[in-house]
Length: 248
Image 1 (cartoon, one colour):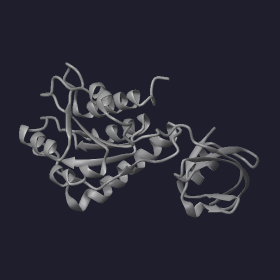
Image 2 (cartoon, rainbow, N blue to C red; image 1 turned 90 degrees about the vertical axis):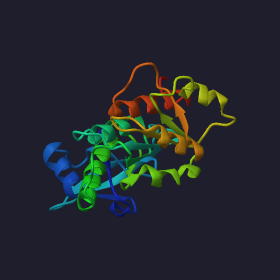
Image 3 (tube, helix red, strand yellow; image 1 turned 135 degrees about the horizontal axis):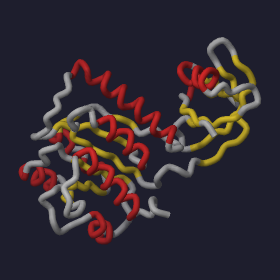
Image 4 (spheres, rainbow, N blue to C red; image 1 turned 30 degrees about the vertical axis):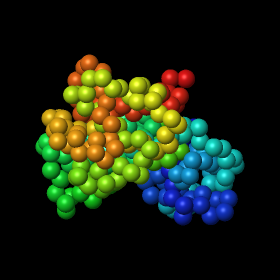
């Protein structure tokens, strides 16, 4: 069944209004008609099955027929702090991380990050990434759209570590401790986690030392060196597997 994300304002009692680009998609691309059903979500973890009642000039009016809890959302919140990769690969990171189950994406600048984002263009970039996250969330039948945060430096990120139950930093120089071993040592299941992925040149030893002082844990993702845009996917999948959220 087709799925759309809408704002809180789209709900008026039992009626849901579909406008803008979604209106065009419903009426022109999908050619749905009165009586057809689809699912809407407002990011509250619920799926609303609605039935089209009528089409106005620029609005589809639909009535709520059923409400169910969305079962696609992970029961743990994973934030991905990603050093912005080259060649526009941040779009790929946003898309695939959303499909896997990330909760929040934080673009970061590290010591060796090559990409520099003009502050004047940052809002446009984030808007573009947020749109990609919305489309990926729709495609993967998620109940929430991950938020894309403002670009920040790794130094600024350190101060947020205390807000998480666990902060993992995949690092190619770490050879002993992996995600599974860290998970097995935990006294209780973490609810809020952050993964920090470095740039093409990796983290410097000084950055890792500082991160450890703030509570971050360097981990290995295995004997193979992964590209920066791949490492986040692997770490996300490994954590969700350990949490029983992936693999059945």
